[in-house]
Length: 260
Image: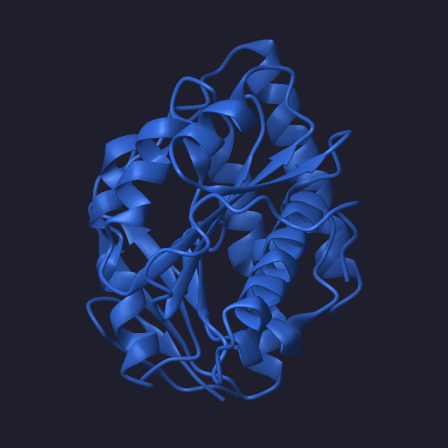
């Protein structure tokens, strides 16, 4: 089973279709060694701040937003903020959005004539200005100390029903790999292109983080949890929030069922 260590956190080691090529957005500027991928749905109120903050991170030369069937101005505002934007005509789920974003980066790597593919930093669309503090997630990957990093938020917001899904995911990862992550569902992750390809095809929907961790550990790759001062919108405890948690739980259960 994988080792566990620490790097400001804990460590363990051991094809999408979008219908079109990505819009140019942030593509040509700076090239950089890291591409940020932001899956987004109905995040018009925060996407501008998130894209702007992410674009300023050290080493970042490209920000890709995948609009996963939004009904608001998410795509337009992301484009105005300088992101390369991919659009799903309908909501296809987080895993599909991540794959679409990674494929967009691959195409832009080819366009820019890069010998080495960019590393991939996945961030949530609702981080807003706090995305500017995601830099520590990149450092262990650039230094080749980790194949993937997972964020551990230093400030947490109590969310209705969230603890149940987190506990379920964490226990499933521990049973499958022997390693217990602190925040198994955290979507803020940086990984090499090779690590991403090793995990494909990604699990559907909200099971993607759980499956990604298990699949990479089982293939002997190194994962490090990194403490970061990020924050996103609280989900709440109303009916809509509880339905979201139910979908999340179902997706995690499906991911774990195929990885026993």
